[in-house]
Image (cartoon, rainbow, N blue to C red; front, side, top):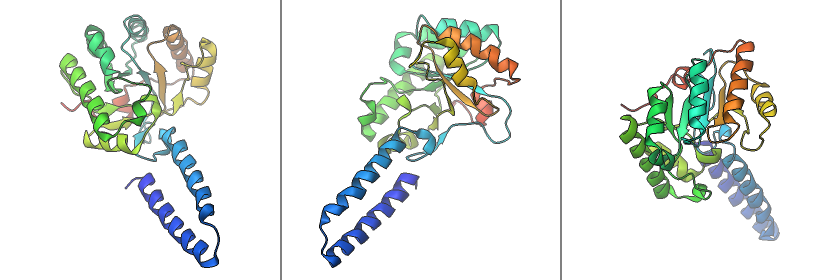
Amino acid sequence: MNRYQKERMLFVAFLALLSLTLNQFGYSYFWIIIPIVLFTMYVAYNAFHLEEQFFLKSIIQGKKGKKGIAITFDDGPNAKITPQILAVLEKHNIKAAFFCVGKNAEESPKMLKSIYDAGHTIGSHSYSHSKWIDFSNKKKWRIEIDKSQDIIESIIGKRPRFFRPPYGVTTPDLAKAITGANLLSIGWNIRSLDTMNNNVLDIVERSTRNLQNGCIVLFHDNLEWSGRVLEEFLVRANKMGLEIVPISDLIDERAYEN
């Protein structure tokens, strides 16, 4: 039972008790609306913060005692930007994780294969990454997940175990779909916000401010400035004495089913 299920049960019990109290003392049932609104806002907040582990458990950092940090990229592969990222990673002999959108992999299968052949980890990031994907029910989520998984497996010959929720948003239906697909939800504890700012130094400063062993860093490989951000970030991390390791090593989990 996850946090949402436990706290929803407690909330329902609270509403029942409140209703009895209101009825006993003759107060208006209007007062029930206030806690309902507050609880709804509380649930919405948690939906947008996967680190709260509200609907499902997400891995947001390395196993306790593990040295190193992991770099991850979302929303690719991108025919123009991903090769730049791969070149920088090869230059520094670094292995990263790429959480790929199924339709992008479908359009650029050679690029996905290049990522895998270079020794990087491939994870799933849904098939469509639609703006409205978070309103999907369990059935639609499974279609999104399974379609992306099938495409990736057909290209690299392996089926990912790692899934990153689009936009970092979690819902009860997504939680059920991920559990049913036997996937691990992978989050982060360092968010670069590189999609909201194109100033390279600002992005790197934000990404390294609290950087330490065990961190999982989120970048994107579909932005014009992604390559420059990565180059500067790697230089800064090296000066801080931090080793960059494959995410599977940091969290001590297999990246693929087979």
